[in-house]
Amino acid sequence: MKKLLAFTAIAAAATGVFAQDFPAGKTVTLVVPFTAGGPTDRVARDLAEAMQKTLGTTIVVDNTAGAGSSIGTTKVARAAPDGHTLLLNHIAMSTMPALYRKLPFNVENDFEYLGMVNEVPMTLIGKPGLPANNYKELTSWIEANKGKINLGNAGLGAASHLCGLLFQSALKTDMTAVPYKGTAPAIADLLGGQIDLLCDQTTNTTSQIEAKKVKAYAVTTSKRLTTPAVLKDLPTLAESGLKDFEVTIWHGVYAPKGTPAPVVKKLNEAIRAAMKDPGFIKRQEGLGAVITTDKRVEPAEHKKFVSAEIAKWGPIIKAAGVYAD
Ligand code: ASP
Image (tube, rainbow, N blue to C red; front, side, top):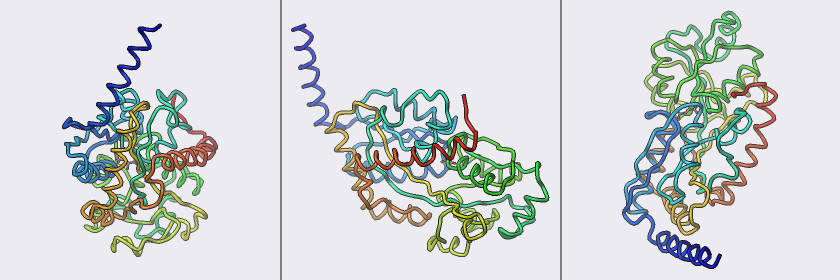
């Protein structure tokens, strides 16, 4: 017993020393649980660029995509809790607990919360040749094409999935869900006409709308957007007749449970520094993101917020009767 205590004390002291030195020139991996080139990836790459200035080490983005972000999230839950493997995920952290019957991790118990990063509105967009030119025409087109419409998503629990679910339930219609590992490939198929509609973050859709490559119908926020300029004239779904419709996507950063407190503190400081980095702000705001400047950038508030989101979305998802085994 004595031996064990002595060993534990030495191990704790060693962890403390390593924690103080973190990242000690060693690369940090930021896992993105969706495909490269999509909106979550976009946030992660901009954030990594800003955070590495503070941390003084390289941050590599690792796209471990699939199953609505649950694969990449599991990878981080099981990684060594040393601050060198992190996760950037979005609202899926609050929808997965209700959508997956067997989730290999517990969102509230298996992670250290490092801070929220931003909130991003979504847009409802359509394939290039779609005959509807505005939201009103879209609803008539949906009515006339019942049973034939393909709606893309990034897997069960993804933002696009949640938005699509709510949209169908508000319209009392069923569309065929086409899952991808992220919305970068979903947009590619939308452009090619393989799917008809997609709900996706403005960080992914703004440039496509600007180039008039896709049809844009509405934003999913409760108020119209004031920026980017190209999205200003889009109506909200709520004002278009879908009362109370609101989906805003938030992104946060996580480390495996047990990551030492000094490491959590350093990582949080790097996130807060990124929130003030002019390059990060410019790139993200240019795509419609709202940088987190309130207390949710603190780990404890970030965690409180995610728990509130789990409580908010759980009953809505359960009522929709959608789940994965
Ligand atoms: N926008 C995607 C979603 O629907 C994820 C992604 O590809 O970043 O959640």
